[in-house]
Amino acid sequence: MAPRTVRRATYDPAVDDAVTEELRSAHDVLAEFYADQLADALGRMPTDRAVLDLFCELTHAADLGSRVADIGCGTGRLEPYLAAKGLSPRGVDLSPGMIHVARRDYPDFGFDLADLRELPFDDDSMAGVVCWYSLMYLAPLDRPAAFGELFRVVKPGGYFRHCVQSR
Image (cartoon, rainbow, N blue to C red; front, side):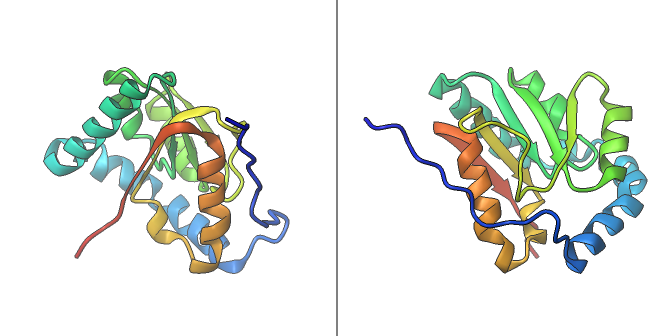
C-alpha cells in the first residue's frame, strides 16, 4: 500500500477573523464558569460516557498506540476520564483562559493553545481524536481546513469521535 498523502487545507493563522476572536474571548470569560459547572458533568451524562467508552475500546482495539487528542478540550475535563480508560490524551483549545484552567486543574496532562485549523501535531501521530462539544462552533467556511487537520493527525485506521449539542 502506498503511503497516504495528506494535504493541508488552506488556512492562514495570521488572518484571525472577528468570529474566531469573538469565540476565543467568550470562552476566556466562560472558563471559570465551565470549570465550576462542568467538572463532574460526565457523571450525569451516561450517553456521553457510553460513547467515550466505545471510542476508547475501539482505539485500543486498533492497536495504534494510546496517544489521543482532545480538540477543543476546554477546561480539560475529559483528560482524566480518557486516561482512566488507558489512553494518553493531550488537550488543545483556542482559548487561553480555558487552557489556563485546564493546566491548573489537571497538571498531570498536557494542554496546548492552538486553533483546530492548524493543530500542533505531526501527521499520523494520534491513535484517535475526540472533539467533544467543540465542532459546533465551527463556521461552515472553516470546516474543510478543520476536518483536513483532524484527518491529517489521525493515524490510518485510527478513530475520530465528536459530540454536538442537541435540542
